[in-house]
Length: 147
Image 1 (spheres, rainbow, N blue to C red):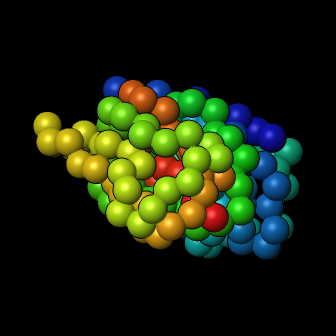
Image 2 (cartoon, helix red, strand yellow):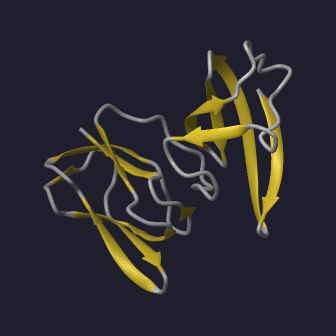
């Protein structure tokens, strides 16, 4: 893996670029894993040679930028619950292995000085927690996984 350190708008990011399959690239940003699709990708990407994120035009399934600072836990089986907006995690209301009901609060996110509860979209069991209290996240970032 090739690792880069960035400072964007005063915030620090550690980006590790891993294995590539065609135009798809495995990238880890501050402990959160992403699969990104490179537009205008070279015919073959060699992770050891690295790809300059500053020069690559990158599309992700989650917005680039601030992601959880804590190390991401392996995603469990199930459906990821994503943040509906960018903000700071002020409370994680569940634990791995806990059973939840649809609509039950799983995380509280502070955005624009307002606290927003992120509910469970369905009944199930928490198989992974992707954030910690104090983490800054972007819209679309996974917060928990429910099976």
